[in-house]
Image (cartoon, rainbow, N blue to C red; front, top):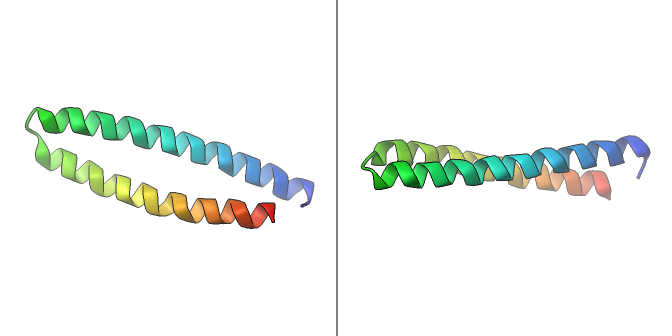
Length: 68
């Protein structure tokens, strides 16, 4: 793997880790909101989190391709 691909893969991996941390925090807040009766907000957040999950899978595949 060339140096640019390594740098790109490392950077994407760090961004992926940040995305995972933000996702976890959003889910925690969403559950807290849901427990206080705002189930519609919780549902909206869960839809957004599903999108993050879908994108994270694609990002992981891209990182794997850069590292191969």
